[in-house]
Length: 44
Image (cartoon, rainbow, N blue to C red; front, side, top):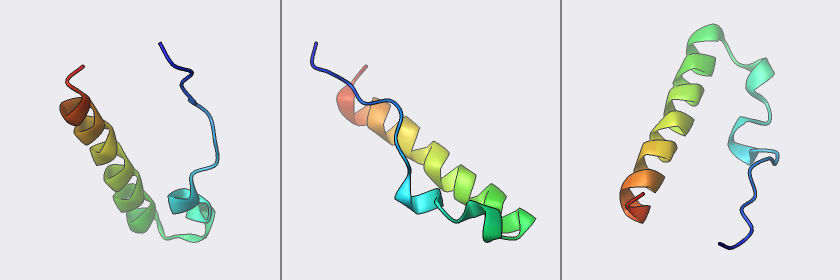
């Protein structure tokens, strides 16, 4: 198995602390969707 990077700064959420509550939730939801897509694409 190749080396997998699990911890790094996410450029999409680097300023999440400056967002409104609803925008924080939206941003988290957008990022969560990427997990499901990655699993689907890689057929885990």
